[in-house]
Structures are given as structure tokens and as C-alpha cells.
Image (cartoon, rainbow, N blue to C red):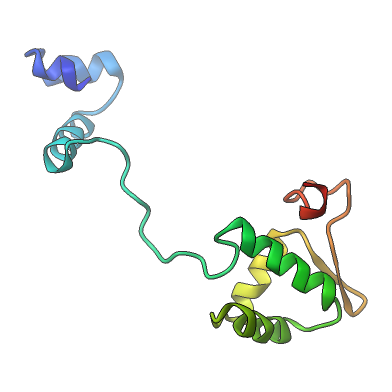
Length: 124
């Protein structure tokens, strides 16, 4: 698309040919002029404090298995002690659910074998 514009084909024709808007072509040209690439920029926001590496998944998985009766608050405290990062109860809850664990009858349970949630670490 950008090569067609560089060859002198009018932007309106290029937009119709590739099925994009004129604004998109302008955005791509501007982005390439800034840093030489049109690849998407990194998503803004913070990096996750939990589950941002495969090692973190294993650590949290082991923590849940070894402390299956602990509350989310206790898991937050354990995470801070082992990883040196303080996390909120909401963050810990999202991380635990992302691994597929559930809290039933006063204890944490790993995902079942037939669960469509994230694949358990024990099977990998």
C-alpha cells in the first residue's frame, strides 16, 4: 500500500484498491516517517504483577496446591513474601481464575481435566 503511494498512485485509488480509508493511509505514512516502521506500537499500560512469566505461573500453581485452604488475602501475603511484589486481592483473584482454579467448600481446587480454561501446568 505504501509502495503504491510512493509510486505516485493517488491515495484515493490506493484506498479503494486496498479497502482502507484515506486516514489509514495517512496514519501509516506518518508512523513510518516517525520510526521507519508501521508495525503496531506496544499496548499502553502496566505489566502484570502476577503471571507475567511462565515461572510465575508455576510459582502460583505450587502456592495454590500447597496452601489450598488459604484465603486470597493470605495468598497475596505469600506472593509478596516470595516474589517481593505486593498485589491486591482483586489481582490475585484474577490470576488464580486465569489458571483455572476455583474455590469450593473452603478449599482451592485445580481445573478439571475436561475444563476448557487454561491448560494446567501439571499436564505440561
